[in-house]
Length: 78
Figure 1 (cartoon, helix red, strand yellow):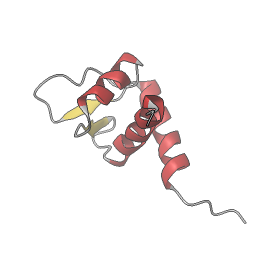
Figure 2: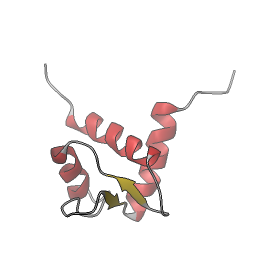
Figure 3: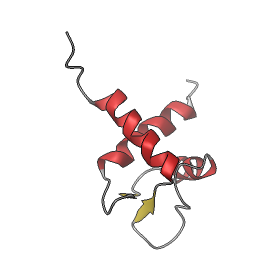
């Protein structure tokens, strides 16, 4: 099976939005490799450290909300 890491990263970014708190922080309880990729893409601040949450970048927060709505909300049209 060939895993598409970009799709995994999108899903994790969307799920991070689900745990959003304090205006831009999210609980970082996901795969470390994926969290590092999100950091490398400029979507979250460094996930390394003792904090149990991670800070979104401005771009990451917007993209997280878009992906959350795309992947996890019901379409109310038609």
